[in-house]
Image 1: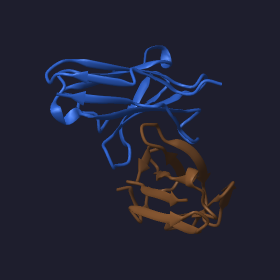
Image 2 (image 1 turned 45 degrees about the vertical axis):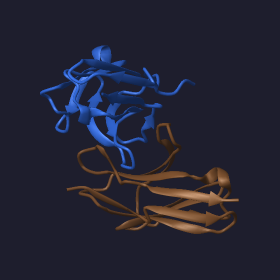
Image 3 (image 1 turned 45 degrees about the horizontal axis):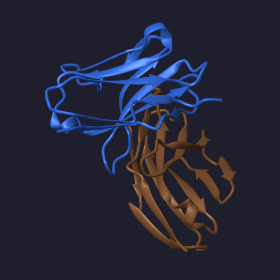
Image 4 (image 1 turned 180 degrees about the vertical axis):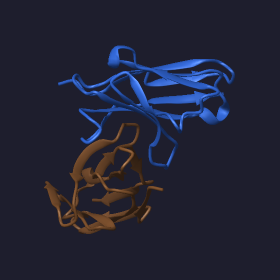
Length: 109
Length: 113
């Protein structure tokens, strides 16, 4: 059974304080790992797709990495506008997206 | 380019009443998903369509929920009758095919009273 565990559940950072969010997964036949950002009252916004271990993707202050068991979303020098819930999802052999419960990030000015 | 459009954005109904949600996916996207999201949780899949065919509806409570995607474009999700526990955000998403990233709409927040 596909399983995604995200940690921590919540994270408070000072502006400029870099950190990482973790997504551990168990899936039969990984066909992609996805990171989304979700702001309150809105739908998830697509950030990255990773397909194989060792792959990395970057976008502004965000960098996503992937191993065979987990993915990290590194946030470098975050700003208050980076505050959101970050969701991780995996696609396995059944081709469905299976989501974790997310990490709620708060960046304090 | 327009994203995934959902309506209504908010809906309040009394229990035992019917309700319907509508989704217009991104043009050219063949795969359409309906998800349910409870507060503080990640989205949970209800049903996935490939064109007009429902290829995975194993998590859809079929006694009260139904969905359709006529002509393989727009989709509707219906609940009849609604229960208090159905209060949640209903999200629609679409992707070009089942192997590509999915893009979400803003969701419909349902409150059953």
